[in-house]
Length: 191
Image (cartoon, rainbow, N blue to C red; front, side):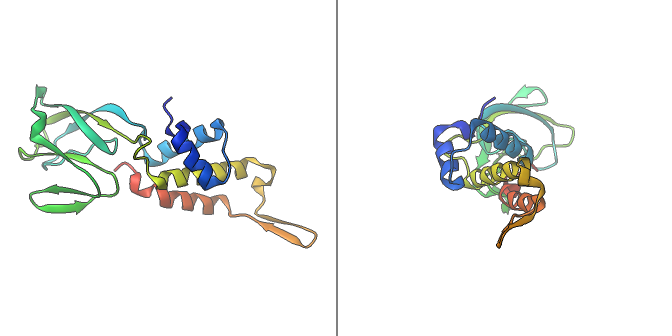
């Protein structure tokens, strides 16, 4: 299984944020959890999506961010890739202007007009993150996941607080930790 969190560069960032170097097992657990939370594999890879037309000039893909379109077929006929554009960043553009769609959600847009609902659009593309552009928000979320999983698997995981002599210890509940994680992965979710 590909795992960006095991890349030495990403691993150092996790260590910097967490204050310690988590084991490979904890990093794998965080990686799998991140993929589940956002709804797609985060690592850079080639993918093929088959979509029905939607009456618009935008085709929404399941893996983000899209880096390159390698092949497009509409109704089983090859199309010229230069007829399509990928708009990077926060917005997507067409003739009507710029629409906010979230961070890193890049979609191909046809210069040739819209697709009808009966059109079958098959797109092969390269998408995902590598060590050069992996979002810091997701690295931070990975640290929260590691912290939360460690806390819930320890003997103290079932406690919210306890006291020894005159010193009290209190932890955030699992629900509070989950809300913190949600705040960091929300913008990367599949639509």
